[in-house]
Amino acid sequence: MSVDVQDWVLHVDLDQFLAAVEVLRRPELAGRPVVVGGDGDPTRPRQVVATASYEARAHGVRSGMPLRTALRRCPDAVFLPSDRAAYDAASEEVMATLRSFPVVVEVWGWDEAFVGLRTDDPEAQAAAMRAAVLARTGLSCAIGIGESRLLAKTAVRAAKPGGIARLTRREWAEGWGPRPVTEVWGIGSRIARRLEACGVRTIDDLARADVDVLAAEFGLRIGPGLKILGLGGGTDPLDGSPRVAKGRSKEVTFTEDITDPVRVAAEVEVVADGRLVTHVAVKVRTATFWTRTKISKLAEPTTDPAVAAAQAAVVLGRFTVDRPIRLLGVRVVLDER
Image (cartoon, rainbow, N blue to C red; front, side, top):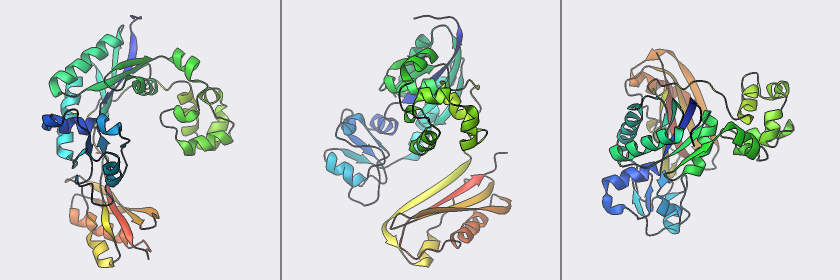
């Protein structure tokens, strides 16, 4: 259906991305249940699913699930280790394909991006992009179409896998209003509970909410922003600048809990890739799942990993932990200049 020329946002969402990349590398796995996560060994404890193919999902395998649970649910699945370099390369090729069109591409991760364009036929443009991605990379994607990021992101739910769907502001107002606020992208159960205290339970309630009440509860920036979500999302322009990571992190979940302070300190590893580091944060999770993160600003930015590691050791020393440690993580905040 053609409409007047106007600005549209497309949400491009790659189907089962990590698993799809692995199947491209191993064509003999096509049609089989594939599970990607950890080192690929489902018999080892404390490893989780990063992505499952649709065939594995049919058996109840989901992202974030322990690999051991995935093995019980789908014993015939092929388990593969995560390969970040391969996913980086595949993602870059997809984004380059999208940028070959006269559009603005705002990258949101390995497997998704928002695309801004002006057209009278967004479905035709979406179909052309989907075909180009498949032809160049061998990867399938779904595309949601909307007049805002929120509407496009919501529309893609109906498009997956491999399809195209549109959601307009009118359709949002008429069809989505009675739904709970947790149906809105970006609103989880915690925010929903605070909204309920303000008398807001549905998307209609949010769209009609008093901005002053929301600002009093959530602050002058977030409160009014939530109301905009209730109305179908804002119209701020997409950012097509290259995506630069604001931080680097590494977490390790130990096969067995560790208690030796010397070993704990030795396990702290900093990954900065030569970038200028301004802050270092350390995350600790004990065997009882008590989890805390502490962060510290460096005296001055540094590219020296030894300096960053020394600061991480200082931050680790601020924890008073008398229980076995299950997980350690370190995150560095990078200077964006």
